[in-house]
Image 1 (cartoon, rainbow, N blue to C red):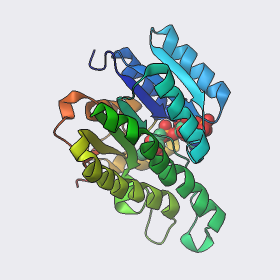
Image 2: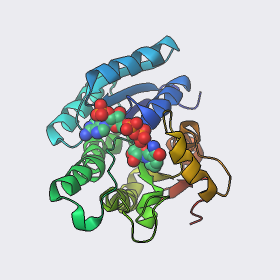
Image 3: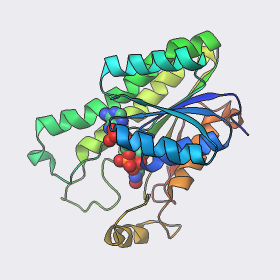
Length: 253
Ligand SMILES: NC(=O)c1ccc[n+]([C@@H]2O[C@H](COP(=O)([O-])OP(=O)(O)OC[C@H]3O[C@@H](n4cnc5c(N)ncnc54)[C@H](OP(=O)(O)O)[C@@H]3O)[C@@H](O)[C@H]2O)c1
């Protein structure tokens, strides 16, 4: 029970990796709060995790809207009196479009949720964590934030540049937060997942990616969750400003 008595927020915890992270935090004793935009998905996730004995609640909030984020964090502090862990996981994905064809609105959509969302959520929890003189923030970045391309990009082909740039911004923001918050005993780290096949990944995508992975398989949500929980736990208390690669060796950085 690494997280017994702790309060954790997992943004985008209604689906995919975020739901697995929320479930594992709850299994290890945390009181978990998840958010997302779709209330039905949030209800389904909370029911599933509660059925397994987890303590979890959901708040409908869009991480790209400062009003939503402030209301969410205020509610968590009001309900629980503390915030020990923030997992900045919520993100939107991109179509494969070459930069010369990329619309400005699409660039803004990715940046506003993926990068600004991390800024807004981190900013909103910092005051509470400083008051507590402790906290863990884990930001979900990506292989793409380090390479500027998706794993299966080919020379001259589309790279999903806007997604990559949003994830690269998160890497830099993680280090800035870690530097500024270190005197307050707040650790800020990132997880750079790559070559991950969450539930529902098409077989043809897997077949394209597996030959590019030295460990010879795609990662699971549990692989990513294990690294995330390590960074959220006291086991990593002397690690800050670090990005952990979870990519089966696709990028050895
Ligand atoms: N899957 C991969 O292979 C992979 C690889 C590397 C990194 N990652 C990173 O891992 C994280 C999770 O990915 P995933 O594949 O699990 O994604 P996913 O299944 O699409 O889930 C995304 C979650 O974020 C929420 N979300 C999206 N926009 C939001 C917004 N504006 N405000 C609040 N919540 C929002 C979604 O809920 P609503 O839509 O209801 O809002 C959902 O709960 C992301 O940061 C992603 O970049 C994933």
